[in-house]
Length: 262
Image (tube, rainbow, N blue to C red; front, side, top):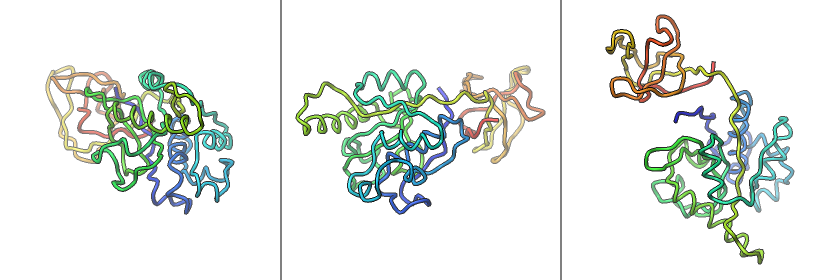
């Protein structure tokens, strides 16, 4: 299914802080604020630092955790639903129910093709969304990357379980599969989104059953992100601007990039 993606926040080079190499969890929290506010809160992980309840020295020493994100969110009047103690089955259930999740884990469980820092193998946090491929790869925002990517479910499971198992064991406690994650319900926003043409495209005309127009790269349409199959192609229903009338024109999903709600 198609989902509204938050504005991606790249951890290294965060313009608001020099702590960028230590705040992967806060960068995920920043993207989470975008999600829960429907795009109305646009901040970086560094903007969460003053409100997270952890000193600079401790952040450098130990990074940040989900409780720090929850504390920082209060500054913006938002509540983070911390699900620490739940299992991988709960993570999958929440994602499939439409939640985004901040998932903490051990980066060495991701393959080289998934990792965005080959030499980094430590504890990390990523944001995983309710969009998947037929191969059960889930849309993810890894703050060490520069854009979204899909990560196989088995790697996400191993990544989250290895960290949790180690922490429970080191604390002298039995581990029953509990993980460290928080879930975020997307805000209810407009059903219509801007969609920018990324590849020259035609539109499917529902009335005449044929491809029409030739829209150039950069053209902005208004679409409803629910997907329909038209002439064998996955498409979004176009709802504007004129002359692309609601219920008549459809644009191939592969030829546009979804933007902000309108």
